[in-house]
Length: 177
Image (spheres, rainbow, N blue to C red):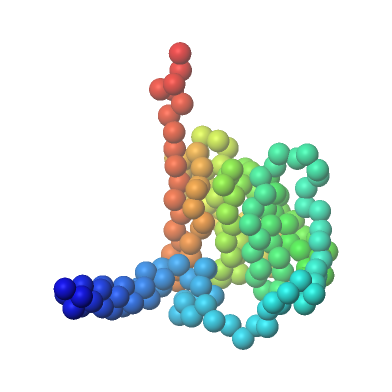
C-alpha cells in the first residue's frame, strides 16, 4: 500500500519541479531577474542591530488621500507616484525631479520600471491609460489609447518588450435605485 502511494507522490513532485521554472519565467520582478534564481550576493541584515535607515523623505502631506504607489529603483534613483505626481528621489533621499501624470495613478497604484522608463496606469475613475515617463528626463514618452477600466489590480509586468496589465471595470448603473 505504501509503495502505491510513494510512486505517484514522487511523480507529482518531479512534474511540479519541472513546471516551476516555466511559471516563474513570466514574473521576473519578483525573483531578481529573468533567470529567476532569487539568489543574490547581497549581504542582508539578520538582526535589527545590523540594519540601518538609509533615508526617509515625506512624499505627501499627513492626512492626504492621494494614492501612494510602490517604489521602483532604476538607474540609481528611487521612483514613487503620489496622486498624479511621479517623484524621482536620489539614493540619499533628496527629491531631484518630478512629473505630473495626465490623471492620478489608479487606486491600486503599481508602477514599474524598465528600458529607462517608469510605467503607471493612470485613471480618472471611469477609464485609464498606461503612461510611460522617461526616467532620465522626467518627460512623457507615450500614453496608450484609453483602456475601459476603473482600476488596475495587478502589478505592471514587463517581459522583454511586452507590457502586461490587468484592469477591472464595474457598471455602477446596475445598482442605481
